[in-house]
Length: 397
Image 1 (cartoon, rainbow, N blue to C red):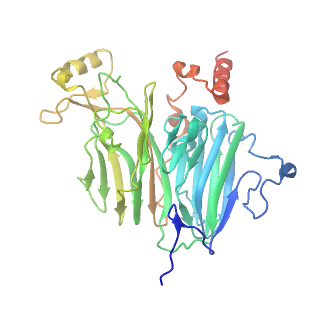
Image 2 (spheres, rainbow, N blue to C red):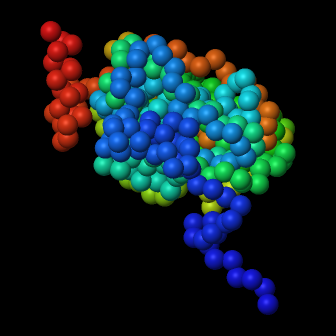
């Protein structure tokens, strides 16, 4: 009789080949029987305090084989500039270049350094207070995770927990987890924004989170008609996969409002900032040699106003703005070509080696126009919010 294999979450109820470990600031090596030893076990070293400006901190250095199962991080205070300028880098199997290079907030699925309550299947921020992710990250020889403070000031508190298993069966053809951040402050008219490119290897595109700072107000100028395109295995001029619009890519339609679902959502659409995510879990996107992912910058006006779109653009230009353009006749009716501010984090698995990423955006680019808006300063529903308000008042004096 065939043996029954009992599972939960796709994992066996017990596996004699695996050992469970956890790294925190009180057990930085994840050693067995060594958790919480500081101050005789009375929470004596729960976090890195402070995380000094300009420093790099080795969060984890784990000898394989193994698999990262869960990562949890929170910092104090919860500030947009902090969350965009603490940089996470992951190195697999002693490679010299990172396979993950992403700002803290963006890595966990939120653009613009905004914190809000959202729960997706693999990334979440419960109550808008702490970041968590469950992407499985196998490694054969070594996993090294580094955090860099490039804020321009100390981060008072940096809490973290890395949960992992040892003894996993990681082979030469196992795809490894990757994540890459990009930002372009002004996209080029009629040139699609690139979410991911330059990947060489075999693997699977997991999805992305995208941030937009629209250059024109909505309404009347809707920003999200651009199609997401996926070029696979040698595609050149035209992609294999092409959607029908940005809000459609997020599995919504006819505009976009705030919501959170397991594999798609838009957790932030406030104060002129947009943040959305899409994870291809049940609709996998595989590639055998290479992949490129882009999104168009196309907008529209309401159908009944389409006949007046030239007047809209003329008015926009009359006040010195050049970020909208009426397309040629025969193209999308009621549409505009646009220039907007885009950022993104792409997630994927691929076989090693990792090809070097494009130059990482510097602090001035990462931080541009993401500071707290005046109307956000009244949203202090917890201690971190009060701290943000106090810092803002002090810095203004």
